[in-house]
Image (cartoon, rainbow, N blue to C red; front, side, top):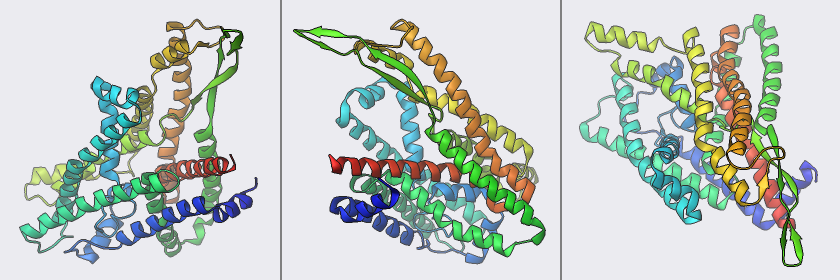
Length: 422
């Protein structure tokens, strides 16, 4: 079935059309909410501050674009993403959470998700208070009483929970992952502003560099698609079993080990750590104490323009790729499941030998995935250093998210079309 036939089928099939329209309607509501600012903003100071601060530019990606004008949904889905990551990490340290998520089926996963929602509230309060305190120190929020400051925190926390609810409704009644689609919408919404920034700062002498950047962008996008879809197949054979007068099993299949098993999570982890120095620097800026002011200036200078930032960024992405893969992929559990189902890897003994083999293959595949993610993360920084175009600084993370979300959305729509045919 061709692309245009699929598009036609989406609009002719009533159930699929309703899901797509629900997603579009939710995205429109989300973008409208992103235009409603919180009270007490000095818009001139805000635009001046954001134009020279890449720290808030990175946060704006995960806020779905709501931070650029300090909207009521300025936190976006950031607290919920942080909560989900913390809950996944807790499954390693808390065996009961791991059993709840892996062994209690759909009911257990629903309870696990509910715990993530509950954890989102205190995280949203902490993030909201911190951001508003930084903005107040920069004289962007002015002449606010204590009650007005409290109400701003309530507004942004309520906005974060509202966006999370919209994302979950999109996942349930629409197509694709709602939270990912909201981040995708915020990234895409920045494209007109980035294009206009390039147009206003256009220099004819940079035409060769811009052509080179466009070519590199196309090649990088193709590379991201290939790396996102790439997998290492591990052959698996099922032993034949005789039950009564019939013989079952005996088939062969394979176990797909993805090159980019961790997705974009390692980049999010690395950014979260690298944002702390800049956040502390912004928080301490303007202090009357000379020592504190000097420390704040040093922390603020640890930005994306420095070589140490790029090197540390690459190392953190590389390490977190291995860490997150180890958290989410358990070779021991996989080898036990294969053995229980009468399956084995040809030439490898079941049990511990299978576990070691899968771990060895996974380690090699993860190495390639870690190198890929690290290069994608720092490549926009290198492009910015070459071209001097600030708009390119956030491209790697944004590009990876956009490509991953689009691939997932296309797969979900294909699955819906296939289900309709059956």
